[in-house]
Length: 160
Image (cartoon, rainbow, N blue to C red; front, side):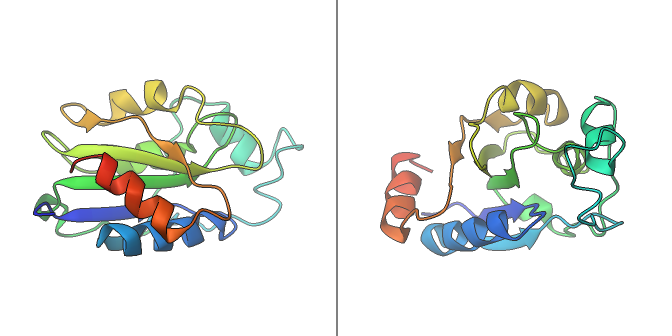
């Protein structure tokens, strides 16, 4: 592959981090963790509590949690896999923050996600306005147990 690839991911519990690491290996990509400026606590992630931080953020479409650091050389990447856990059937709003922090015009963005039970839902519909000018491909769920061979096959099928 001649294109420069990045796997950027947000992981609240470590599950998406494992998937991102495996994908980066399979794709020969660089890895970047999207970390919140204020880390999430277990109380913040309690979706049963309507007043928890994650619930409040996900109920506010304009919510954009701050990111701890920017990748200084994003312009060198042609393809960006963006990974996250599914929250309320879509990407957490910190992913919108990440996408809105860079100019992805002409770049290919491929979401991937982890979830205990739901699929990608309307994720691309919610992400598209945050990355104008990008080519946003359909993503894939990368839940536990996906092999490196399966990941390599998926990357090859994308014809990057």
